Image (tube, rainbow, N blue to C red; front, side, top):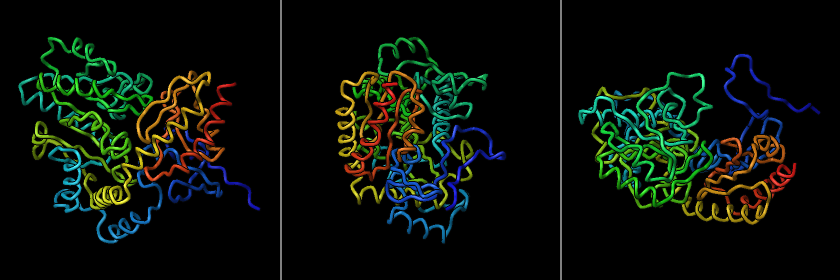
Length: 399
């Protein structure tokens, strides 16, 4: 019998990730297998990317069909599925126009450019954007500057100027931080912070910020890269508050694993960019557009928004019941299938321990176990997840 294969760091790949020593081979539904045949329940979904799980029987033939026709052609030419996907996003968001790119970072970078040009068009020479503590918007120099994590910013100064930083869910501090500042042009945040520890914005706060942006003629820009595309049980997490932003970056789950990003804009921001102001080589390519169109179609056919809400509620309640009274548990939070379990001490070791037990998950903000499984997950699989995870957390907290 052959010895188990042990993935090792390649001397030719940049050392940018603290990888778990697993190499995945294939997946089906909410399960994946590594190159040694070991099976895992996927509680991570490629970090909220694999909306439809793995090898979805409706998605795979559609992508195969598209690959056999046209993968890439450039934005010199019209791409019919761009129009289809843009219409689908506009209808579901209540907004008006879409720009397509390839990643969440690109979508957020485009949002920052929109805000700055919005300011310049109003005669503001040095536009400033309100951003948040613990935010994460990407790793380019501009999105890194908007991010609220000194650890990921370290070593990359000087950062881009033009940001005003405030804490989450504190409208008075936001008003005070921007008082008598004519350079502010936008407020930019995640409805539920992902990398920052699964920190939700309260519904009333969202309404208050929308009202403040209207009052002061600012753009309300909501990063739905991780919490959007049905993950909370609505298409976009901010919709639980009944508001509509002016700018909304998307990515991750929009293409069910195919690289895709988008910026959806409302009337206030839809016409800021003109030809020559912004662009991308790979954004809006036929393959990624087909993936987006099919993802939304399948989500609706299979009722995945309702499933995310229902199974997410079941999963959270099971976690709360199983960890009730547990010393070392700080809080369980999130919505739908975006759940964070905050412990009182750093818990990065749980990533490997969970993998050893057959469960994929992540730890973010040092002490928060993050669960973002595929939106196809069943209550039975959620119970299986809880059955694996609870003993690991309980044992860890007893150490």
